[in-house]
Amino acid sequence: MDNRFTQFIKEHEASLKKHNVLFNFVGYVKLGFFLILIVSGYSTFTKGFSLFLIGISLGIFFLFIGFWVYQDKLKEKIDYLSGMIAINNRHLDRISGKWDSFSDIGEEFIDSEHPYGCDLDIVGKKSLFQFLNRTHTWYGRQAFAKDLLHPSYTKNELQKRQEAVFELSKDIEFTNQMEYYFSKIGYSPSAPDLVSNLKDSKPFTTNKILKFILLWTPAITVLLIAFMLIFQLKNLYLTGATLAMIQALLWALGFPKTQNYLGAILDTSYKLAPYSTVIEMLKSKSFHSEKLKETQSQLGASETSAAQAIKDLNKILTKISVRSNLIIYFVLNVFLLWDYQCAFMLETWKAKYAHLCEKWFLALGEFESLMSFSTLGNVCSNICMPIISDKSKIIEAKDLGHPLLPNEARVNNDFNLHDNIFIISGSNMSGKTTFLRTVGINLVLAQAGSFVCAKKMTFSPLKIMTSMRIVDDLNEGISTFYAELKRIKTIIDTAKNDSNMLFLIDEIFRGTNSVDRLIGAKTVIAQLNTLNVAGLITTHDLELCQLENIYPRIQNYNFSEYYRDNAIYFDYKIKPGKSNTTNAKYLMKMIGII
Image 1 (tube, rainbow, N blue to C red):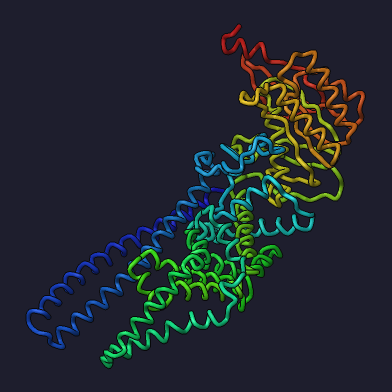
Image 2 (cartoon, rainbow, N blue to C red):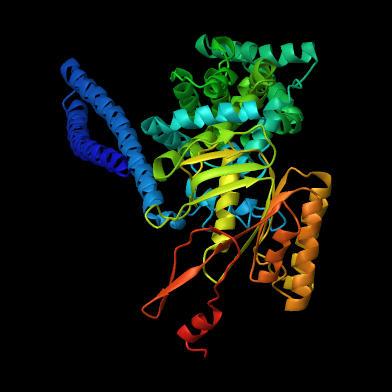
């Protein structure tokens, strides 16, 4: 599996080495030309301005500029190759288990109140987000987080997403290239502000007469001043100065309005130019899946091309950004009413593209999300595209495994849930909690249209609710037990409104005494059974396993350990029936408590 990434790295490193050598060589050539240019220039000034020396100097100057441009192109290629090597190394880190060092953990999406986000390690440290995320833009991150935490797709939409994810997984080099160019855009929290401003198609001014004056007065002023200077018409000096002063006054009077209209765009400090590259790459790619073709169509036809629109917008922003140089900014506004001209250019742009621009950014964000999910197909050794069932509350899987575990260490299990409640008993460290997370995280992937970590899987979309990683809250005066009660209550209330749910409860009511725990657990399971929801619950209380004899939907499963040569071993395989082993005393003895 990692051979492909290793091969890509070797190819890119070989090319990088050649380009670095060429880059350094061109640098020396540039230096040589620069020194020759100095000598040539000195000779020209000291020995007279002969046409020969001037021609030599100009030739050397143009050669110097040509090599300068060429070296810039080499630098872009070197940056690209370095970026591609880094991306492929990240894939190798995913395979080797070093991905937990990735800096982006999706911290802003962590919500302890989310139905399953923290319990199933969807976001945060050592999470699915940290493992798979390849998004680099604000809209990409939002789309990926939404697909992981709030998926809401129909069967048809899921199937189209699956086809897109599968197709992208087969073209690693293309997705690597796309990731690199998306990274050149980068993450900016101001992105939604930019889009919000661009969507506002309200014109800068509706006064046609004022607009005509502001557009054409600068042309008249500049022509008059140029005519006056060329022909030395001193009697027009006062007229030219008066027009310039009038324009300066117009600029000052309109400054608050132009600042409000243009400033919101400029203040975003957002990189727009690289967007043209990713759009053009997407538009020129030949896709087979319907979803990816839809993405291409969302980026516009030739007459409303997103790539051209972004290029035009970037030109406008370049003109607006001239204000960073106060002297040039002042001169341009006094003589050309520069702010007004920029406002009118932006007004024209919005009239043509305002109703389309948000769609572009959303489409590109969704593509980044799909690209992230496609990664699982190349870094996990046990994957499939799950089948979406029309039946209710179904999860059937062959060799279901946890995608965040290393390939060589992962233990897979068969799993078949048909509108059941599974009570899973077993000793400490035997794998109960990991199995709950395995079921949950794969269902999250499936409901996002992604690969899952299984040889084969069939599922029906289900609302996921968990109660696993319960912690107290000292600030709110909430104990662990009370926090769990609140969580269980949320699960029950949700089940009352929607029985199409999968609950995952780990070690129910662990924070109270055995008598109350058993009574409470029986009550909760009975109520969840009555509400006709499916789910898995782990417990050390073997008495709960008796519920299998009372309720037909309830089935017992267990994880167990075995001993050999006075040592404890776990096979992490789920088995039917209740547990018949315990290991607490052995573990306490092993670490020296007893």
